[in-house]
Image (cartoon, rainbow, N blue to C red; front, side, top):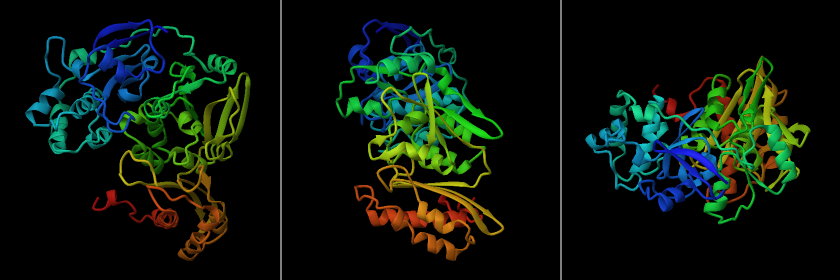
Length: 453
């Protein structure tokens, strides 16, 4: 296949691009741009961060799980291209030198490119912007000082003027959901690639040979978010950063979970549809959507069908999706904000949940009128706590009712024991999350981040 993109300001055309080749390997092995480092090779550490610019703006992305065809019609900047054509340093690079921000050096290029992207976007929440650059070996405080020092400096011309080239037409890169439906129906064995934050690991860690891949990035109609007075509908290709921005005014607790869900690099790539379709039992997004009463919209060729999101997950590793069928969108009713989402993980930011609980409890005149509660990490699939819901519904919203409902968790879940948590610990945490929801809806402080504010 032939793809076209900009690399550090120069147009590149690859006439024999390997669909499953990663940008990281190509940069280092084919172009000799070794400033971009290989660390974890799974999109976790941020050592390979590059800046990718498309029609939606500049994003920091992990080059290790970014396939070359995903760059078609985009612009890429590596740490070598952060400086100007004449060698002038970017304000971030200059500030890193002046504030002694370098650590051992291996992860520093990734930090620089996350900061360069944040600088271009005018983002000042530096702890969040750098949450996906995990190294803390020495100089994290000086790095934050450098980011703050560079923040008020103008964006250099060679960065500000970044404009992506026209994309090359590719047979395996449809430009609409109609094209995708026809292509996937004809090739149901193909692997659909949205953000590649999961599929990328099939190649880098699983060493799988993906012979036929369909890249969805050009399907712009799948990137739409529609919010009406009755419904919120989110296209399958909406990335998690855009999802967070859209949901924040409606359900702030949900948006805060998305902030912790993953790093900037992963949230900028991972999609709502991909997160649902891969069916992970510890995917953080489905429990929140299930608690909101979400409906999943599927398509195969010209045939569409809808089903409650909770019914899509059948058992571990198995979803109700036919060959050639894909997730088109997910929707849920517009509703008052009674949703609370709690994520428990060993690391606060960008870590896999041990338990995630989503509670959508409506209380009127002291009585529970409705309760939808869903969990991740408690079963082989994202799953509702139906017995807990029944114990709450129609009952007074009191500590006594909470205690009775907590006793029902054993009936709803038989969680597994693994390296993240024991089964007993997961059940205790689920019970405690219900207690936290009770305190939260009463207006009590339930987050350590809010203490002292």
